[in-house]
Amino acid sequence: MTPGARAQAAIEVLDRVLGGDPAEKALTNWGRASRYAGSGDRAAVRDLVYDALRCRRSFAALGGGMTGRGLILGRARGLGDDVAALFQGAPHSPVPPGPDEAGRPPEEWERLDIPDWLGAAFEQSLGDSAVPVLQALQNRAPVFLRVNAARLSRDDAIRLLAGQGIVGEPHALAETAIRVTGGTRRIQTSAAYLDGGVELQDAASQAVVAQLPLRQGDRILDLCAGGGGKTLAIAARLPVAVFAHDAVPGRMTDLVARAARAGTAITLTDRPETTAPYDLVLTDVPCSGSGSWRRDPEGKWRLTPARLQDLCSLQAQILDRAAGMVGQGGYLAYVTCSVLRAENDDQIAALLTRDPRWTVEKRRQFTPLEGGDGFFLAVMRRV
Image (tube, rainbow, N blue to C red; front, side):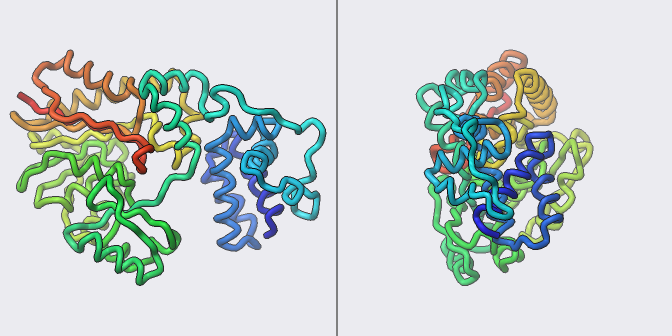
């Protein structure tokens, strides 16, 4: 496919997304209907679509409209690409811009690609860091791997990956973190991945697990396990008994197999209260995902004040449930992939008001300025 044809394909996919289809569904449907597109073409179209979604407001302003065409035109102008070469009207390429597509410079929160109400929430939550964080969220997220330290060292993993055409370097956020700088498409077919030596996991997510208070022989519950990334990282740190639960059990479908591949064991439970108390309960709660919008840019456009309020109510319910399963002297860890105060410090303050048995032992806010996603961690001890 020519660059113009890729641009036209991205325009068509984006029109479906703006019409209500999830981006992954729209891309999959386009790929199935476009058998002529090679793997490189599909990857290029995907990149165009996600670039446009990350910068939806600014590109729409530059491109003259909130349409697939407006977003791709705005992207070309914003990045200084040759608009005439992309919008040339050749077969399978978009037609040249008309006089009504001149666009304009983005204003205020448009420039930072955030809804106005969320821009104010970022300022209240992050202060002077709000603008740099929002600028970081306009860019693609790095690819990180977690080394299974029970199997090999980080240096050995980097050498093993290099032999399979994957270039990686150590990352400072966690001793197990590798940032992949080349060969990312080879990861999931590499021996290092298939043999359980490495897992895909954000560096800040790894750093969260590294700060959990684990002791050999502890009983640990991951109450909101999801796909199990943190569950596996916990199991790899020390010989502990790890239980995993999720409100949607289907999310954990392959977790036991992945644990076996990594040389660890995890017990799935649909009734975690029956095996309480635990020495540590991890609550990686549903949240806005505002710290990881580089990976899921649709999230910031779907979020509304009402949805945020619903999430905060759910987070409080999960905290109260988890608190009841922690043994005397045990720990409760609260985690979000959010940078919003309403989901983070405000939730901890509210819990301490409701239940004075807890004391905060550790509090850490990660932002994309440190390289990984935005995460919040609070570790509380029952006293």
